[in-house]
Length: 449
Ligand SMILES: O=C(O)C1=C[C@@H](OP(=O)(O)O)[C@@H](O)[C@H](O)C1
Ligand SMILES: C=C(OP(=O)(O)O)C(=O)O
Image (spheres, helix red, strand yellow):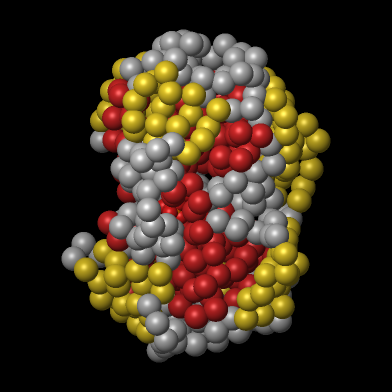
């Protein structure tokens, strides 16, 4: 539950070469889904490598409120005793999903076809984010949502008593919307069909199949048609969560920013629907090697070795945006150290994340002496080359973990220190960020308010 506490200002400064091994936490998307699917399965699901960030802990609390028994056995080791499809109980209190769009949207989907009501809220960031994109398709199943104007939280959702399957084309590229519809479809009789025009992360589909649901995925243009047969009995699973590529992006990019660095980032999930940042960095000339490629927990995984070297600006094709949607802030920070211009198009979804990430990056980069251009759907960064970023500014994180971490990484290579006004949101996805960067030799520390 971020955003409820005292701000934690943090500062980073020009650092000696980063060296060592960066063990990043478990994947946030897979962690949320492990808890939710575990709660809907029959029997006891065992999870290792679960991300213990605030977003995921809020989802665990929510699943308990809906009746699942959840036990933490040790770091990252959890068990979930599920209630079965359609078995959710009505929560007695408001469900607070903190800072997490994934948490609230997937949970709304998971309860939308069970005849119970639940009221959802979140922190100041989450209460600004659009929920109509999920409650609109959930209404097609027969669920009813009453929220603030503009479909904002707090919002009460009443699940359908007699749900019907739906045929739904997702109007925005969003794995959260797709997943909410698929989770709702679990308790609707018959086949639900979800069409996405652009492929987004497919963890829900992979995991539903693993839990025993009948699901087919057919490519269609650059998107997919997904068909799920409702009312399966989901069987408890043993799950190993791969390490999060979106968290790995920070030590990888920090090593690209700080001259002389060489860092190993082991065991990173490289699902193609998540790996767009690494493709882009390679196009910029980054020295990244993918060692020991293997499969873990149903996802492709590799150890990433990253060495600092010269980078050149690139144009990121819009069709790649979905596969690196959370990585644009850190890409914008890296682009500041490249020679030439980096153009990011097709990125308007960034405006409805924890903050308006196009605006937050643009203002912060300008404050650090980097020229940018911004349009509704585009961000351009004019690189200043290695050693050319001035820094020397305080940047607002806007309750957004990725903005905070991106500017702290930028400060590791800037001429003057970069202060982030509030680094507390980092705990939502990457609680060990400060310790991990410091462990590599990066100069990052809490600063005075
Ligand atoms: O499904 C998921 O786990 C996520 C989907 C993405 O959001 P959208 O579906 O809104 O693009 C992403 O930004 C978020 O961090 C995690
Ligand atoms: C957008 C993000 O998360 P969420 O939508 O779950 O808040 C993110 O982690 O970058």
